[in-house]
Length: 407
Image 1 (spheres, rainbow, N blue to C red):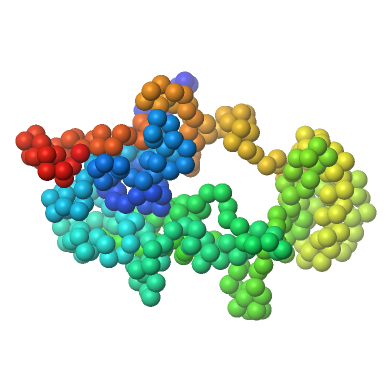
Image 2 (cartoon, rainbow, N blue to C red):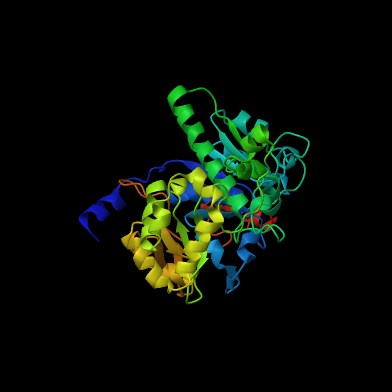
């Protein structure tokens, strides 16, 4: 490790001293808390005794625990607490009085029913910031509907525009709506913390809806409809109104993504594939002209890529400074030298010693980067330590455990 890297590791984490209480499960709320934990916040995650967060059993398991769990829950403390009991809810109130942020993703009204909603918790801690993630938001006629990312991606407009025009809409291979909501929740929490520090006053809650988080990234979808009555349709691998930007089949059966939609880039692309006639065509000099001739342009590119293997295509386009790339699989990612050089593949070991790679931490701060201190914890691994931190003694903790309140 270089002196500079040692210096970074010795520096206080950017969120050191920030305490977060995480209520909820699965993705949207917990991933927001994960982002804060990666940059030094102390995150206390409350899970139900017995099975814990359902994410522990999602996707592929090793020795009964999800491999996803180890990544998303890194750096968190696990407190196994049965929120169905009043004693557990009293512990939540005490913890909320000592933290900076509470993150929750229950259906609106659930925490209020339990007496641990915004009004109750903020009364005990006027400086509290609360991130509330739900399918449809804390208000509006749909607020009480159950919401998952798959539904939010439909309502937010993403699903309708995804796929090919002659086939049903498709989803991306990850729960994108959840992740987008997590990012907006994290941004909201940090803005609220800055406001509190810079301007004083009281805390506030951040209302994040899954469908709105999707809708917010839909670019010109609404302005185009509002001004021109245009409904964006599915367009396969291309970007409508931007030319050329598509995925093309190579001679070896692999695909290449090429983004030649900048004016100067387009000229370099056409010259690289031997189509000087198109590079110098005044009708194709600007994007609006190219859009009118997009099929002809795509046909020329496809004809060229179809005569060459993927690696040859990439070499030629890299030499011409044209953005292009292979379609990466997980296997491609973990062996790619750029991922390695940027620290985007972290090497760890599971509790039984099995080596496992995790994604590196994003974004990269130059002086105080985030880091993985430990992998997702065992259920209730930190119960005693967290309860002791709010003044509960050994006998009280033992009674709570005997009563099934904690585990």
